[in-house]
Image (cartoon, rainbow, N blue to C red; front, side):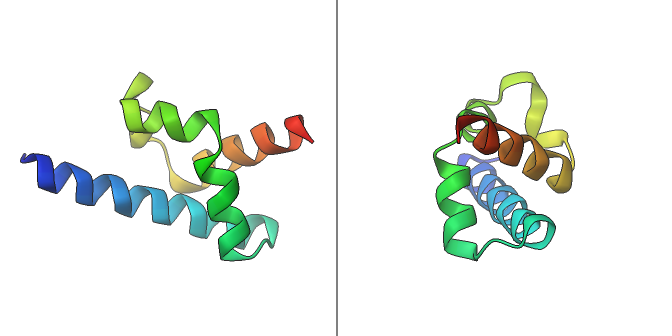
Length: 72
């Protein structure tokens, strides 16, 4: 797998998680994107920690949301 294809897959995964947050929690796309990119979980996914990218989009959306709610 090339570096370019890895970046494409990672971008698709991020978009799918953000979309799931919108669907599950009724937040606008921009707000969901802000929440996602400010989360510790998004950094862990970027770093490839614990193969989080293998988890379902809805599961990861819930993890990010729980992290967000815990901060507010």
